Length: 164
Image (tube, one colour):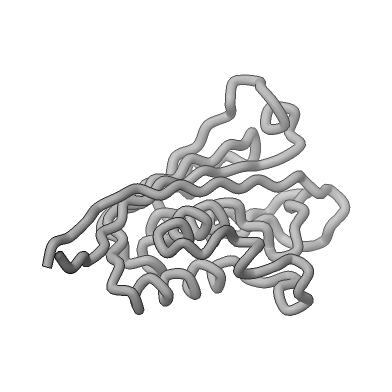
């Protein structure tokens, strides 16, 4: 059986919410901040971007298609559960996740001491061979530099079994 490799991409961003009492969660880590992110779920931009990326591997559209924000079931939902559900779908199709590369765009909080733990969290859920999480400020451009939002992008390399 021949193996086919290809890459998939995902992106997510959420506006900062300074009035909510919910925690700021990025990459499965709760931050002690005076703000959180607007979103129907817990708004974890890292898990959302990774989930979006992996959804491309199975052609199921995007996060909002599979888990609509109009469904009350997903209000306050733990985003790791979205990722786990999609990984389960990939496993059923014998799709292996080789590598996941994540870039987080934000001004604060600093992720310097948390990127390795975020990568470990993703690796534990996805069983990917390699996971890397990086962060950037976008050099004073757009909503990120205005401290109005946080975003993330993820690129995944996957291996699909293919019968000739």
